[in-house]
Image 1: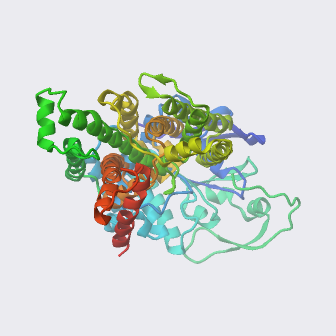
Image 2: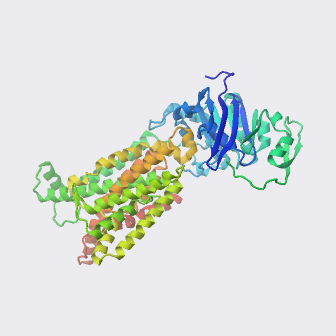
Length: 277
Length: 349
């Protein structure tokens, strides 16, 4: 379907605005290829989730174009796009009585919009998705009885059952403990390498992004500060100025990436803080 | 896995359908009329086309149409309640949440106050006014919320509830200005009751009900996606804005027709969907048809109880009680709450 030279997702001069901030996102151009894992980082209100929603086609750019496998996103019917792109929003219902297995099966929706019952092929795909996310053990349990980390893995399994070529996630580790943070990023890394998916993940954790992502997009206030491999983008100097903090870097023996530890906030030149958009 | 299997689906819904057909079958035999004839006599007169026989006139002109109306109203309220509770992610949502019942009641109250006597195709002026009132309220609620750039269910809920309060205040205002006789008629109407109407009239709403039922039940898979999350549903190809508008419009239309025919019968639309969810789970594919069928059977049974209970009570204390029957809306909650609470209790054990 896609060769190595065509980007899976391409943003060409994309801008976007809100009613109260019509020119929020400044022109952004990106080429994202299969097998890459992109981390979108930046302070609150930088436009991380906005970019993710634009890439998912949930929002339409004010100007510019997003191309999915060389086709403009706006020209692809919704149900076809859903077979290519899976999106995991930050707010997900976790209090459902629906079983984990059913949640994963519902990821098959783009392929079976009409049939009343799930067929054997769908069940097989769902079971595989649950195996690769280690959720098969609680496939019978209602979602509400699972822990936050388990439920998040179930939602990831549902997205895998969608068999996408692009997997977009909005802060998938936001409320999870250290173990799940690592295991989910490991899973995403594996998906990019082994399944040759394009993974794009919005995160607040710069260390996880540096360690697990092949590429990083650093945003600030709707501006693209830098995009590229973590080592070139995430220098302490740049991050200190973008995040307005003082950072210390530490390096353990077996790590290739330096760990950045926030020490204290710098004084804000301008006290007005934006909400996360 | 609680996965929906054909066996579970057809098994449970088949059972419900069987109950529903049984209710229709015995409906000519149940009612307040003191003439005694067997169910068998009634059906024999039906198949012999003996339209002059007493059994036919009572069984098939009075009783069965009334039960058919109760079934349709119950199906609509149960189904629309399940749809609204899913759509608003709120277990307290009912088909009346957007102000349909209040608008309908206001229409009826106005009609009673001015003594509206017109009728159209055998539908009374009060029913027509109630239907018009309900439609007007839905229209206004939609107008307010569609004005916003993005359509959120919270805004819709707020607009609906506020419109309902406004209508209630207007009703009180009109009641205050009314005579005792008029006020009595208004209060009686607002209790909600299934009434005896002719066979033809009892199914005259079907052209409105059937498409609504069909559209809502066919939305089940999209509603399942919507229940997980609005954006996740959109990313999986569900046209969420269209889903919301279509579901709310069809559900409100059908509910308006119920309110016009029977008044604002309470409880069915609130608790039947939750009762159904306790039995079959929250998968809309089975929850919606189950809520519909349980709602229909439940309301028909309540209607029978409302007709018979005063007779039983009178026999018990050995003196006839004032009226021969209760309004159906009085019975639904009295009968339904104990059933529901006991199920809830057993579930929590």
